[in-house]
Amino acid sequence: MIRVMRPLLHGAVAGLAGTTALNIAGYADIALRGRPISDTPEITVRSLAAKLRIRIPGDAQTLANRIAGLGPLTGYTVGLGMGAALSLAQAAGWPPTKASRYVVASLFALTVTNAPIILSGITDPRTWATSDWISDIIPHVLYAVVTVRVLDKLEAADPSFDGQIPP
Image (tube, rainbow, N blue to C red; front, top):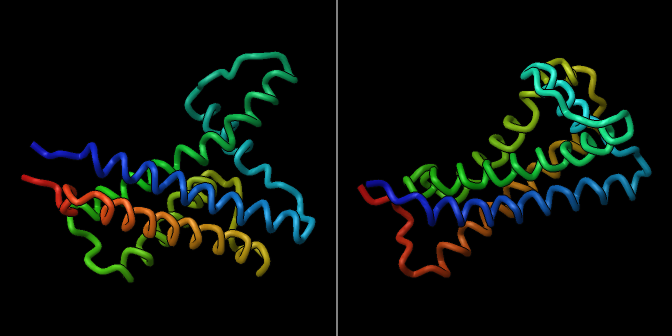
């Protein structure tokens, strides 16, 4: 039997910490540069609901409010899920080095968050300015660094956790 509860919990906690760091970086960028808040999460929720034929109930204002709430919630869900996936991979012994964990986590965060919005046509990175790329890459790398560091700290603080999933 594979024991996955501890890596899942560690990953969820680490993913939440990483997501918090990502959000702080994003909001700091908004505050410093005076740029608008992205409507991509809301557009993504609308697009996903339409593709899955899910009706989000409510009159126009209630619907807008629900979508405004669902957009950030999808981000938290993705962040927690990525943390759990990274923790399970780490518990299984992959990737093997600390440096590779940072690289894998960064690429994973950038891919998992951007691929759906690129594939669905919500955005096209070929049209992004340098500042758009920086605004996207820095928070995702920060997510990866915080998530990996928290995973490492949680595993070090739990002497019964040997970093491996038993057979």
